[in-house]
Every structure is written in C-alpha cells, then in structure tokens.
Image (cartoon, rainbow, N blue to C red):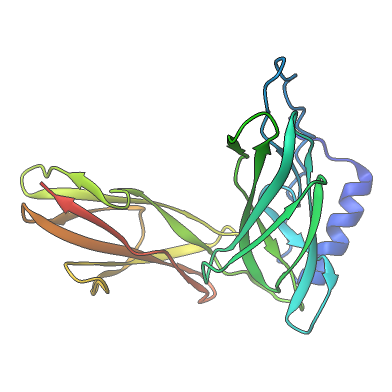
Length: 242
C-alpha cells in the first residue's frame, strides 16, 4: 500500500502547478524499497530511489533554457567497484551515461521529455555486473497543460524474433502508456522495408492481427496519440516469419 502524507500532497500540488498538469488526484509516492540482505561474498544490484518510478513532475535544477540537472539516487550495493548509470530519452532514444563510486549522480537532461533510467553495479569481487530495475520519469520544464505519451513498448514479436504464422496471420502486440492517462489511439506501421508504411491509423487496442508470408522479414512500429494531439513513436522492430 502506498503512503500519502500531508507534506507529499503539498509538494505534489506545487509540482502540478509548475508542470501545468491537469486537475486530478495526485499519484502517491511509493514506499521506500528495502533491498534484501546480501549473501556473504556476493555482489547485489542497486535499488533505485529517485527520481521515483513513473514520476510525472521531476523538476530538477535549471541548467540551460532547454535542460535541467537531475539528481539520481539509489541504495548501495554490496561488494561494488563502481556504478554505471544509463538514462534514455524515450522520444529520441539518446543515451546519457555516467560512472561513479557514490550512490548518486547529477546529469543534465532535456526539459519536457520522458526518460527511463537504470544503474549497473560493477562487482569488486570479479568482472561481473548486475543491472537494476528500469524506471521511467518525466523531466518537467516550462508549464504545459499535457504530456506526450511514452513511446509504445513493442512486446510481440520482439526484435529479431523468428515466428510461425497461424493461417497466414500473426498478432502484433504492444503496450502503451501516457503520463496523462489519455491515450486516444495508435497508428500501426508494418511492411517488408526498414521504414515500414502505414498499415492502419486510429486503432484503439494494443493488438492487431496482420497477414504475413513465410520466409519473409517484416518491420513494424507504433505511433501513440493522445486526446490533445500529442504523439510519440516507438522504435522499429524486425522479425522473420518461418
């Protein structure tokens, strides 16, 4: 159960004002994650703290007219040499990285954009590394009345998968998400070229059955649209029909 304290409500109200978010109930902050006790002589993965998972209004410290500095924090790992953080812009796919021996690091990121982040723990015992969970957040900027949807996560077929059709058809399956919870529809691009053509627009579910030919390579991507006209584009995945 998530805790909602009065101090959080005040901070969230201030944040929503600065982000210009829609009037709605604030998303409660999840309770702190307590990492399991490490086994003797075993490296443990980092447990992420901040920015919080799916945090809508991460303001950071203004750095330039287009960038904020965001402080990333996580719990310490056991038997760690150093940590490598990777932050991905979910719209442009641009990666921002850093390495530190501390349990926090400050990075400059574009305003008004959605990001994912994770931390890799490099072991001091051997050459192994452990990946943390992957969290997402929205880096706020100037006031805005809506937020761009997160790029769709393509779940089936996965990148470079080999699949078998059923009666000459397969299902394209993806997962859509939006900070405003106002996804309207999807445009599906599908074909045999690396820049697939539009197959269907304004599709309302996250699944579409398509006709395929054996021994053929296909490409696909999804454009997510919300009710205010904001759009985001997924990566292009390819797969082979057996």
